[in-house]
Amino acid sequence: MSKFQVEFIISIENKDPNNSNADVNIVFEDGSRYFGTFFTLKNISELMSNHRKSGESAYGIYFWATNMCIVSKLTSNIIEDTIADLIKNGLFEEVFFKIEEE
Image (cartoon, rainbow, N blue to C red; front, side):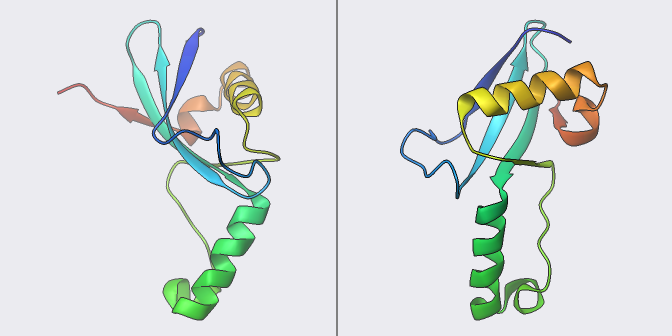
């Protein structure tokens, strides 16, 4: 696991880097693919506030997401640096879901 490319399911270009989330596919040179979602803390706080009003998540008392990673800001550089650090520290496969080929 070394070189990778991040594919954003929906572009983050017009998103607030301080208050947003993004689903991504991480693709490696060998063709293996992984999925994950990046959130900012502000975004999680806003989602929980919305859940308190809507009744979701027991009226906002908790928040969870599969394959979640929290970042300080939602930018391409920060996401790429985060992925590289997780790989370096042997944590990548603990965070992201491997997409099996059909």
